[in-house]
Image (cartoon, rainbow over all chains, first blue to last red; front, side, top):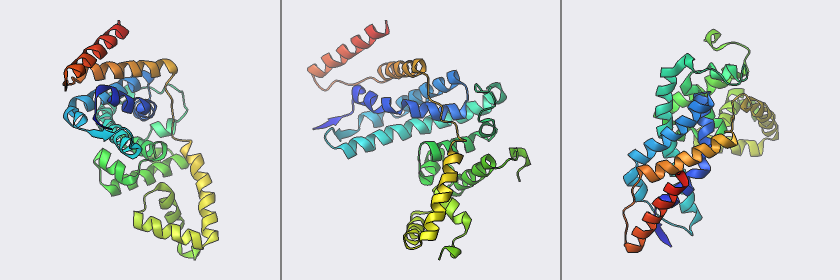
Length: 164
Length: 104
């Protein structure tokens, strides 16, 4: 049966992404309250800006590939808004956000916000380089550079400021 | 054959930064060359360790529930559905009522 997206279906598509959205938010703002707020703000921005597109979506409930692609569209759209807000907030808050988990992951959190996002999207959420480039609106080579530099910094003993 | 492959290339393969064409070629070479395939497998183990350096923080159950509730409220507050029929109108009103009751 082909149906138009309603609030109920939208909730069903959004709900499974909560944990992944939180993980991404936390790696941007390492404070549980800030991360929760960022998830909600990303979803609100998606709902406000994509309202028309959401309710114009028609899909067949029996066709699992259609449902999957819709789910992916919702997930990626929320991430796009979440990253946009999160990067601005990360610059604004900067050192005000203190690590909740002591020195764990200190090196990761000393990386710049965009590199942290790129590494999380690539290695925790399994996005491709092209998808990351599209979502963060940075060129493909920029994404590759951030992956290489981020990996190098995390796997060497040097502090980021000492690496050329 | 693996002598032609620089270690950097293996990193790029595991980083997922090769183009689809380059990736296919690399995988074809791996199928033909067992030494290369072994090298990639060894490097993959290093990668698994590297991935542990990236936080994978899960929300607490309370935090998860809070986000679910907020998400539901946002969908009901920010998105207004247009009814297609009278029965659809009843459904929307009913959903709004249930959501309001759950909130209270």
